Length: 53
Ligand SMILES: [Zn+2]
Image 1 (spheres, rainbow, N blue to C red):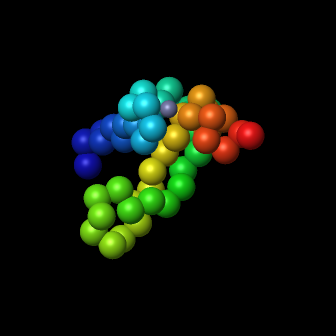
Image 2 (cartoon, helix red, strand yellow):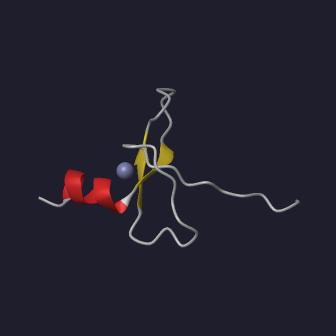
């Protein structure tokens, strides 16, 4: 393995996480409708908007 870079992308707005992904949340969602859940990530802004109220 030669340094795979895992890019965490926000499911909601498409922004990319910083290296530490501070404040990001992962959750399970069936993103491609294949009947199996993938791990989706949301950035802090979207977490606040989606879950913060
Ligand atoms: Zn977002």
